[in-house]
Image (cartoon, rainbow, N blue to C red; front, side, top):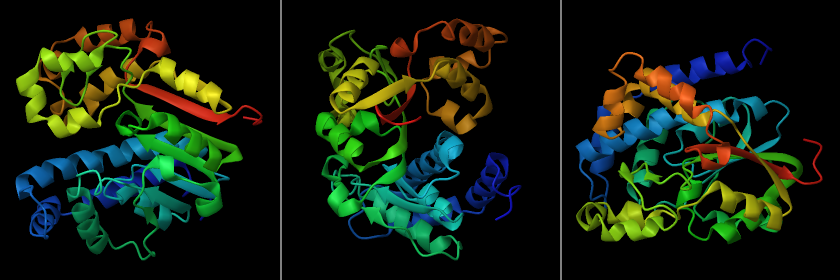
Amino acid sequence: MNATLRTPEARATRLDRLLSSIDRQKVAGLAAEMPGIAEDAAELRAYLDTYLNEARVGLELAAPHLENTSRILEIGSGIGVLTQFLAAEGFEITGLEPGAAAGFGFMSALGTVIGQELDLAVSAPEILPIGAEKLSPEIHGQFDLIFSVNVVEHILPLDQAMQSLASVLAPDGVMIHLCPNYAFPYEPHLGIPLLPVIPEQTRHLRPGLIQRHQRIWDSVNFVTAGRITRLSQSTGLKTNFRRGVMAAFMDRLQSDPIFRDRQPKLIAGLTRIPGVVSGLAALMRLIPPGLATPMVFTQTHASSRH
């Protein structure tokens, strides 16, 4: 592939073209008919829209680190669209997705149908149906790039997972993750404020809402930037938190309608008030990364040249 076609802009255009080619209604309908799927076609269509939209975010996150990368691991590859796309782009990539075992079997159904519908002329990449804590360099080797989008907050054995991820990161490899930072007292999946310091106790204040979304609530580990820093130090990693992520969140509210529609009505409504979003974005640039949500952080071995 020539240099022009390898640019991040060209690659993003190809992903957009691929995502636009997917008949989302058809995929959701076929997945809903698969054995053992409790969700109906409308629910699956909503999940599908979210996962396809997040594929763009994943590519943007990984893009600066793709060149000169031999092996890639996507943690929480979901329905596998981005993993398959990067494989078609010529990368040696493995996905990791334990969702079916964790009660999210609809992801496997959507992934199966998507794999049948996409015409990528490439062998399906390996998808490991295990948790990140089960990764082992002896079994799975090491990776030059490991990345995830909105996954870290769902890894319940986070201490063990970080140790395992460090063990499969190549000596000069890079990990980059995007996830909520619960040092900021807000739960983005449910769109509710949390009790500061003791966020899990919010369940006593909003029992009805949480019960309706019990599966999601039970999967959240309330990770914070401070915890990531401590885990990095204990596993021999160094961590860098990206600045300006909350401001970028506000910008995305204006430019990404699917993302905006997933937010609480109050937050989405702010985008319709002239000047409010830009003003909030300016204020959010002043918030230290350790207190901002979401957070984007890169991790490398302490001895790495990065």
